[in-house]
Amino acid sequence: MRSCWSYVPRWIRLPGRSTPSSLAAERWRATLRAAAAVPYYSRWRKELNRAAHAASDEERRAALLRLPEVELDYFFSHFRQFRGKDATSPLVREPRPLWPAGCRIAAIAPWFHAGGAARLFLTPGPAELHKFSPEVIAAPIDVLETLAASGPWPQESPLFALVALCGVGTPILTPTLRDRFWRAFGVPVYLQFRGFQGEPLAHECEAHHGLHVDPAGVIFERRPDGELLLTSLANPRHTVLRLATRLHAQFDMQPCGCGLDTPRLVDLQPTPAPTITYRTPSADSLTALAGALGDTQPEEHQEPAQH
Image (cartoon, rainbow, N blue to C red; front, top):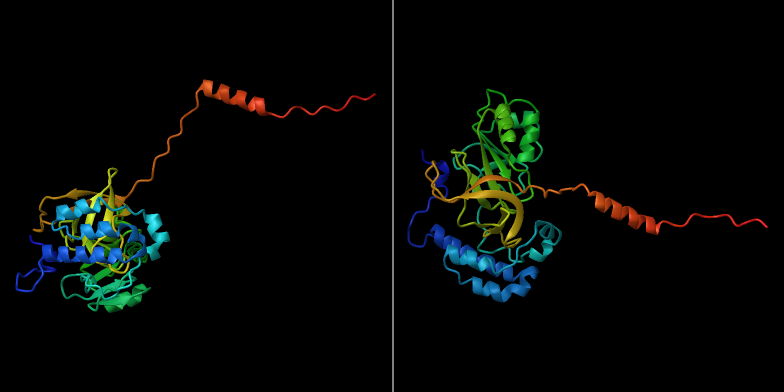
């Protein structure tokens, strides 16, 4: 069965129409130009100019290796160093729709502009949401948790699917949460991984086996420990290359059962916390420690002799 997402966008090879590969090259050059204009990358402008000539995906990945990785804590605490000034950049595109078909979509508290096809709700109560009768609910995962806790979705509502939105620094959809949403809503959940401005990075199809990477919108790398590095090619407002995401995933390059042949992120999950191992000190270590402490103890106070 072919994925409905495979038709969004549908690349028709007409004169003047960008193909995915040419769009990726255009966005790559625009991203590097935007990076050269932000304070953080002022020291790497020469390297950015060299990298702009990379023509293939392999060349672009090799060029990224010559640029610094950015830790997530540093990015959040110094985000102004990555802030671009040109809001009219060609990187800016109408956001990809939350759902490909013309459905009644309720977008609840997204962190980005969801587009005109969806009705925006900020903090809706169950009654307000049921009155709208959405066919698709799209919301961050923690918002869906709150909605699921309010009780089962009424059977008479025409709900068709949930779109769980996640990104860097947001909760991740776990198998436990997926089961909880199924029990509460009775419909399948489709995960979308979006950037800071809502740019599409990866999405889940009806095969539910990984997230299809948008090849024209993002470059993912993996550190030796498995952590994902993210380079968004569609965010001119905060241009950051090789951002450490604190997320782990495997790359699956095989064609998906839905018909799409784009790479997939499989088993996306938070980076495990570092394990701290405490060792029981040996008897010799304890003896040496006791001796060291004994040498530093103050002498006992003695009263002066009475004459």
